Image (cartoon, rainbow, N blue to C red; front, side):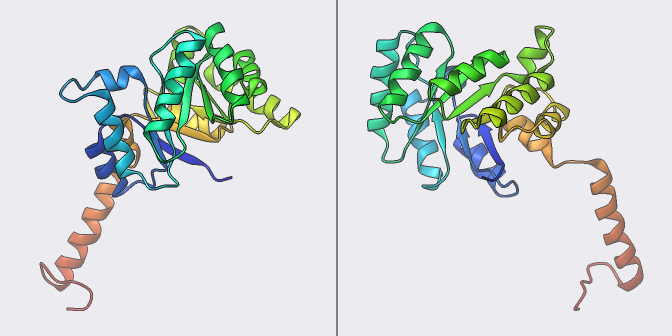
Amino acid sequence: MAFTLLMDGADVEAFRSLSQFLPLDGVTTNPSILAKNTTISAEEQLVQINEVLSSDQPLHIQPVAETVDGIRKEAEQISNAFEREVCIKVPVSKEGMKAIKHLAQDGVKITATGIFTVQQAFLAAKAGASYVAPYVNRIDIQHGNSIDVLRRIRQLFDMYGMPARILAASFKNIRQIEEAMLAGVHEVTVSPDLLEVLLNHQGTDAAVKQFTNDFHDAFGKGKTLFE
Protein backbone atom coordinates (compact mmCIF):
# COMPACT_ATOMS: atom_id res chain seq x y z
CA MET A 1 0.00 0.00 0.00
CA ALA A 2 1.22 3.49 -0.85
CA PHE A 3 2.60 6.05 1.59
CA THR A 4 -0.11 8.24 3.16
CA LEU A 5 0.08 11.95 3.99
CA LEU A 6 -2.59 13.25 6.37
CA MET A 7 -3.47 16.65 7.80
CA ASP A 8 -3.58 16.72 11.59
CA GLY A 9 -6.27 19.32 12.16
CA ALA A 10 -9.93 20.24 11.84
CA ASP A 11 -9.76 23.47 9.82
CA VAL A 12 -11.71 22.69 6.66
CA GLU A 13 -10.46 25.82 4.88
CA ALA A 14 -6.86 24.87 5.64
CA PHE A 15 -7.48 21.43 4.13
CA ARG A 16 -9.01 22.95 1.01
CA SER A 17 -6.13 25.38 0.61
CA LEU A 18 -3.38 22.82 1.24
CA SER A 19 -5.02 20.25 -1.06
CA GLN A 20 -4.56 22.62 -3.98
CA PHE A 21 -0.81 21.95 -4.00
CA LEU A 22 -0.24 18.98 -1.69
CA PRO A 23 -1.34 15.36 -2.30
CA LEU A 24 -3.21 15.05 1.00
CA ASP A 25 -4.85 11.69 1.65
CA GLY A 26 -7.08 12.43 4.64
CA VAL A 27 -7.42 13.96 8.11
CA THR A 28 -6.71 13.08 11.72
CA THR A 29 -8.26 14.91 14.65
CA ASN A 30 -8.29 14.69 18.44
CA PRO A 31 -10.16 16.47 21.26
CA SER A 32 -7.38 19.05 21.73
CA ILE A 33 -7.49 20.01 18.06
CA LEU A 34 -11.26 20.39 18.14
CA ALA A 35 -11.05 22.47 21.34
CA LYS A 36 -8.96 25.11 19.54
CA ASN A 37 -12.04 26.34 17.69
CA THR A 38 -14.82 27.39 20.06
CA THR A 39 -16.79 29.32 17.44
CA ILE A 40 -18.55 26.14 16.30
CA SER A 41 -19.22 22.82 17.98
CA ALA A 42 -16.86 19.87 17.75
CA GLU A 43 -19.60 17.96 15.94
CA GLU A 44 -19.95 20.67 13.28
CA GLN A 45 -16.18 20.76 12.75
CA LEU A 46 -16.18 17.03 12.09
CA VAL A 47 -19.18 17.29 9.78
CA GLN A 48 -17.43 19.99 7.73
CA ILE A 49 -14.23 17.94 7.47
CA ASN A 50 -16.22 14.88 6.45
CA GLU A 51 -17.93 16.84 3.68
CA VAL A 52 -14.68 18.02 2.12
CA LEU A 53 -13.12 14.54 2.08
CA SER A 54 -13.74 12.09 -0.72
CA SER A 55 -15.14 8.68 0.12
CA ASP A 56 -11.71 7.03 -0.05
CA GLN A 57 -9.91 9.62 2.13
CA PRO A 58 -9.66 8.40 5.74
CA LEU A 59 -10.95 10.36 8.72
CA HIS A 60 -9.55 9.59 12.20
CA ILE A 61 -11.66 10.73 15.19
CA GLN A 62 -10.83 10.30 18.88
CA PRO A 63 -13.52 9.90 21.56
CA VAL A 64 -13.31 12.09 24.66
CA ALA A 65 -14.25 9.27 27.05
CA GLU A 66 -11.52 7.57 29.09
CA THR A 67 -13.21 4.37 30.28
CA VAL A 68 -13.73 1.27 28.16
CA ASP A 69 -17.52 1.60 28.31
CA GLY A 70 -17.39 5.30 27.52
CA ILE A 71 -14.99 4.80 24.61
CA ARG A 72 -17.11 2.02 23.13
CA LYS A 73 -20.30 4.06 23.44
CA GLU A 74 -18.73 7.15 21.89
CA ALA A 75 -17.13 5.08 19.14
CA GLU A 76 -20.58 3.79 18.23
CA GLN A 77 -21.97 7.32 18.18
CA ILE A 78 -19.13 8.47 15.92
CA SER A 79 -19.58 5.56 13.55
CA ASN A 80 -23.34 6.13 13.32
CA ALA A 81 -22.85 9.84 12.58
CA PHE A 82 -21.08 9.21 9.26
CA GLU A 83 -21.84 7.09 6.23
CA ARG A 84 -18.13 6.51 5.70
CA GLU A 85 -15.96 4.16 7.76
CA VAL A 86 -14.26 6.26 10.44
CA CYS A 87 -11.01 5.27 12.14
CA ILE A 88 -11.56 5.47 15.89
CA LYS A 89 -8.51 6.78 17.74
CA VAL A 90 -7.97 5.15 21.13
CA PRO A 91 -5.06 5.92 23.52
CA VAL A 92 -3.01 2.93 24.71
CA SER A 93 -3.96 3.29 28.38
CA LYS A 94 -5.25 0.22 30.21
CA GLU A 95 -8.84 1.30 29.60
CA GLY A 96 -7.97 2.17 26.04
CA MET A 97 -6.44 -1.25 25.42
CA LYS A 98 -9.59 -2.88 26.75
CA ALA A 99 -11.57 -0.79 24.30
CA ILE A 100 -9.23 -1.64 21.41
CA LYS A 101 -9.76 -5.36 22.01
CA HIS A 102 -13.55 -5.01 22.11
CA LEU A 103 -13.78 -2.65 19.15
CA ALA A 104 -11.50 -4.83 17.05
CA GLN A 105 -13.75 -7.82 17.74
CA ASP A 106 -16.67 -5.70 16.51
CA GLY A 107 -14.85 -4.97 13.24
CA VAL A 108 -14.12 -1.31 14.01
CA LYS A 109 -11.03 0.20 12.40
CA ILE A 110 -8.85 1.50 15.24
CA THR A 111 -5.96 3.94 15.45
CA ALA A 112 -3.99 3.28 18.62
CA THR A 113 -2.70 6.68 19.71
CA GLY A 114 -0.53 8.20 22.44
CA ILE A 115 2.27 5.72 21.70
CA PHE A 116 5.71 6.35 23.17
CA THR A 117 7.33 2.89 23.14
CA VAL A 118 7.89 -0.06 20.85
CA GLN A 119 6.05 -2.31 23.28
CA GLN A 120 2.93 -0.14 23.25
CA ALA A 121 2.83 -0.22 19.46
CA PHE A 122 3.34 -3.98 19.32
CA LEU A 123 0.67 -4.74 21.92
CA ALA A 124 -1.86 -2.39 20.28
CA ALA A 125 -1.28 -4.04 16.90
CA LYS A 126 -1.61 -7.49 18.43
CA ALA A 127 -4.85 -6.42 20.11
CA GLY A 128 -6.30 -5.53 16.71
CA ALA A 129 -5.43 -1.89 15.95
CA SER A 130 -5.25 -1.08 12.25
CA TYR A 131 -2.93 1.88 12.87
CA VAL A 132 -0.43 2.76 15.60
CA ALA A 133 0.45 6.43 16.12
CA PRO A 134 3.82 7.10 17.81
CA TYR A 135 4.30 10.66 19.07
CA VAL A 136 7.61 11.64 17.47
CA ASN A 137 8.37 15.02 19.05
CA ARG A 138 7.00 14.05 22.44
CA ILE A 139 9.24 10.99 22.50
CA ASP A 140 12.25 13.23 21.82
CA ILE A 141 11.19 15.75 24.47
CA GLN A 142 11.19 12.96 27.05
CA HIS A 143 14.80 12.13 26.13
CA GLY A 144 13.85 9.22 23.91
CA ASN A 145 15.04 8.51 20.38
CA SER A 146 11.92 8.69 18.24
CA ILE A 147 13.59 7.49 15.05
CA ASP A 148 14.98 4.42 16.78
CA VAL A 149 11.50 3.71 18.18
CA LEU A 150 9.97 3.98 14.70
CA ARG A 151 12.60 1.70 13.16
CA ARG A 152 12.11 -0.92 15.85
CA ILE A 153 8.33 -0.84 15.49
CA ARG A 154 8.68 -1.36 11.74
CA GLN A 155 11.19 -4.16 12.30
CA LEU A 156 8.83 -6.03 14.65
CA PHE A 157 5.80 -5.52 12.41
CA ASP A 158 7.71 -6.87 9.42
CA MET A 159 9.19 -9.75 11.44
CA TYR A 160 5.79 -10.99 12.63
CA GLY A 161 3.78 -10.01 9.56
CA MET A 162 1.57 -7.58 11.44
CA PRO A 163 -0.80 -5.71 9.12
CA ALA A 164 -1.05 -2.58 11.30
CA ARG A 165 0.29 0.58 9.68
CA ILE A 166 2.63 2.97 11.47
CA LEU A 167 1.07 6.44 11.49
CA ALA A 168 3.72 8.80 12.85
CA ALA A 169 2.38 11.93 14.58
CA SER A 170 3.44 14.90 16.73
CA PHE A 171 5.98 16.69 14.55
CA LYS A 172 7.58 20.07 15.27
CA ASN A 173 9.83 20.46 12.23
CA ILE A 174 10.34 19.22 8.69
CA ARG A 175 13.45 17.20 9.55
CA GLN A 176 11.46 14.99 11.93
CA ILE A 177 8.98 14.22 9.15
CA GLU A 178 11.78 13.29 6.74
CA GLU A 179 13.53 11.07 9.28
CA ALA A 180 10.28 9.33 10.17
CA MET A 181 9.67 8.53 6.52
CA LEU A 182 13.21 7.19 6.14
CA ALA A 183 12.64 5.07 9.25
CA GLY A 184 9.95 3.23 7.33
CA VAL A 185 6.64 4.57 8.65
CA HIS A 186 3.64 3.95 6.43
CA GLU A 187 1.92 7.27 7.13
CA VAL A 188 2.49 10.67 8.68
CA THR A 189 -0.03 13.18 9.99
CA VAL A 190 1.16 16.77 9.99
CA SER A 191 -0.27 20.02 11.34
CA PRO A 192 -1.43 22.63 8.78
CA ASP A 193 1.37 25.07 9.67
CA LEU A 194 4.07 22.47 8.92
CA LEU A 195 2.28 21.28 5.78
CA GLU A 196 2.27 24.89 4.59
CA VAL A 197 6.09 25.01 4.54
CA LEU A 198 6.74 21.39 3.58
CA LEU A 199 7.26 22.31 -0.07
CA ASN A 200 8.93 25.67 0.45
CA HIS A 201 12.60 26.44 -0.20
CA GLN A 202 14.22 29.78 -0.97
CA GLY A 203 16.41 28.09 -3.59
CA THR A 204 13.34 27.10 -5.60
CA ASP A 205 11.90 30.61 -5.35
CA ALA A 206 15.19 32.12 -6.51
CA ALA A 207 15.46 29.70 -9.43
CA VAL A 208 11.92 30.43 -10.64
CA LYS A 209 12.55 34.17 -10.45
CA GLN A 210 15.78 33.80 -12.42
CA PHE A 211 14.09 31.72 -15.16
CA THR A 212 11.43 34.38 -15.60
CA ASN A 213 13.84 37.33 -15.51
CA ASP A 214 16.21 35.72 -18.02
CA PHE A 215 13.38 35.05 -20.44
CA HIS A 216 11.89 38.53 -20.15
CA ASP A 217 15.32 40.15 -20.53
CA ALA A 218 15.80 38.25 -23.79
CA PHE A 219 12.33 38.48 -25.34
CA GLY A 220 10.52 41.28 -23.54
CA LYS A 221 8.63 41.69 -20.30
CA GLY A 222 5.33 39.85 -20.20
CA LYS A 223 6.19 37.56 -23.12
CA THR A 224 5.47 33.80 -22.94
CA LEU A 225 6.83 30.88 -24.99
CA PHE A 226 4.25 31.10 -27.77
CA GLU A 227 3.73 34.85 -27.98
